[in-house]
Length: 234
Image (cartoon, rainbow, N blue to C red; front, side, top):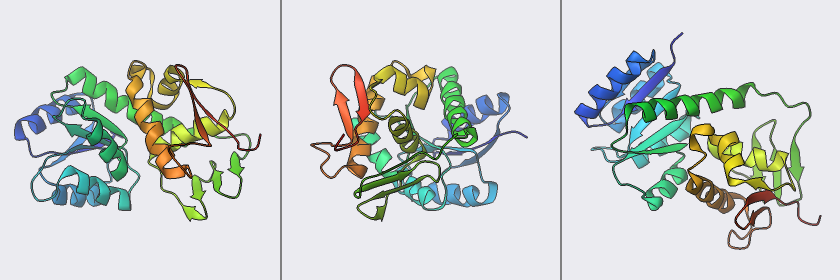
């Protein structure tokens, strides 16, 4: 059965080209030119991935992404025409996006990124842990097997990509993971040169789990190398 992709974008030229490319790759593609219609199709078609434009009439990409996250964990790739807009990337993470692409995007890159996101989601759901992977210290509690994270007694919602990154750090607690290793294991080999991704996602993850993100006690930076998960008190 073909995987389903929902494209939400008001650029008719872009829509036509992307539908042609993705259909040619064997995907079943649905399209909407605004957020409201996109949400309706999300309910009706239950896509495997959503491509979501930022700037749209009626309901912009930010609000649409937020609404999607209220009802679904489907991977969301946001599309923006503003190159290297770090504030946009961080804002997208706030609303639950998994990935960013900057317009214009080449056909090969678009397909490669979609495949990478889907592959990582499939690997994440198929991986079986030989032991229950947990961590708890009274402030932070993580049950990776059950995908449950609580901070100071409150449940914390992580996007699929944030969760995979956090799970990797906990699984390898105490061991420094290089930027490239994290990129390859969490994002895929296609991303090993995008070092900025790791920094942005780590910063965002710290905002969600650290008592003081400016002085992290769990996710520690090894300057020039990477990051590691520290169990306080050890």
